[in-house]
Image 1: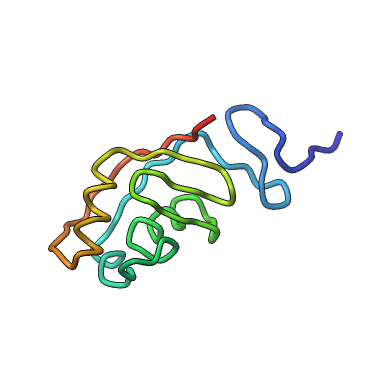
Image 2 (image 1 turned 120 degrees about the vertical axis):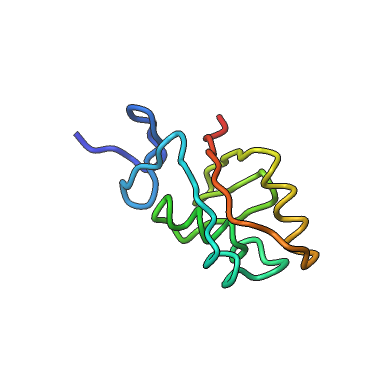
Length: 104
């Protein structure tokens, strides 16, 4: 039996040649993510770097609490919106953790 890209199977979505994305991820934004993150760049901000590490995917784009991973939509908490705003405005930010969940 073969599975096509985009098939839904046991709590996840198949993507990237059969690698499964889970329905939710625990994400930890570290001091290193903050240090290496780029202001105003949706795919290189600290949250994007942390999501890339958590999901093992490079195709990540962050718009506050709206997170896109290889064309699959996830939602983070509102504190992600606050973090992105502060980070982009060069205001001080601290490491934090959150759970992001796949949006159907």
